Picture 1 (cartoon, rainbow, N blue to C red):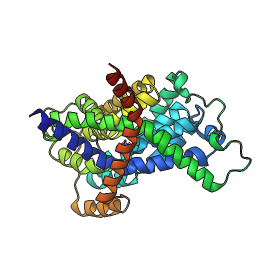
Picture 2 (picture 1 turned 45 degrees about the horizontal axis):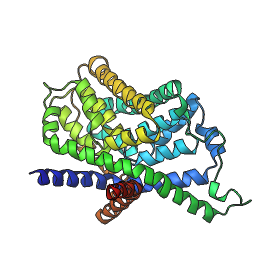
Picture 3 (picture 1 turned 60 degrees about the vertical axis):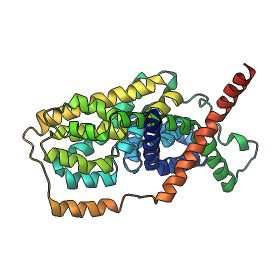
Picture 4 (picture 1 turned 90 degrees about the vertical axis):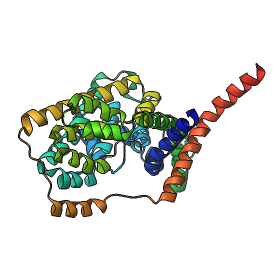
Amino acid sequence: MLLELFQKIILTALDILNGASVWLIISFVLAGLMHNMISPDRLQRMLGNRKISTLAKATVSGMLLPICSCGVIPLGLGLFYSGAYLGPTLAFMTATPIINPAAVLLAYGFLGPQIATIYLVTGFVVPMLIGMVGNALAGPEIQAPGLENPVELTELESAERVSLAQKLQAGLRWGFLDMGVSVSKYVCLGMLLAGLIIVIVPPVFIQQYLGNPGLISIAGIAVLGAIMYVCAVGHIPFIAALIASGAAPGLAITFLMTGAATNLPELISMYKLIGRRAVLIYSSVLISASFLVGYMTNKLLLPGFIPYFDLSKTRQTLGLANNLIFAAPEPLRYLCSALVLLLGLYALWPGFKRTLSRARAA
């Protein structure tokens, strides 16, 4: 019985990892290239300050990237460790998974212009708010340690001129062996915890709860979405079906906000690599804001909402959205998952060796 439960947890965790691993590897590459191709001085001028315009740049950049909340971990941390302040980092990490062009198209097609417009505006305003709170309340973690006097390409700093190939090589090495190793061990831990939660509380139970308008509360959905792994693109049709069956429209906004922008691997990585205060700012502001927007949608913005569903328009929108969605082949997903697991094991290996040596000595 215990072995069967453990097997279910492992298989569920691997299934979640397969869904995010391609974006994780892409983000390792992008984070490494950004770290070494863009000079720290330039990045600090762009994102290393508390300006509102800087938060707007980070938010809009995130809104244009079709990356999930796991894939954004190395990219956001790469920004932070390359010179971005905490506020722009949190704004980017919030906006990227919540909203993207494909999600907006699907929202207009499945949820209708009223909910979709609220979703679009919220997808910009909430990351900005989180960024402002992050800049205002941050302590020493406002900037990554050691970046007061940033140095570009430390391994190659003695050379007067660095070739493009050397920059690419150093960037990929940093993206995988530094950022990738650091992030992967926490992602793997988060995937295991997510697998445990899903096995103990199966999705069928959660869907029954979400699908019962009498049981739904905006506060409950805000907290529930914060611990689930939700892809905004994949869950929009599901949310549309719930609303068509009688759920309040604020549910869509609240669930997509907290569900898409938070998950255990992301929160654990942020806690370990940025700090506890960053996690508290990120999660508390996001949950509070999503609750407030959901409540305002139900009570003030759309009190007499009529469910929207137009089959012809939905099919047209779905076709446009599919052109913007990258579906990785299954072998590639397995390969990327194996690479993430190897990076995680590589990070844990020194600690395992020390534990084994102590056990042998005892």
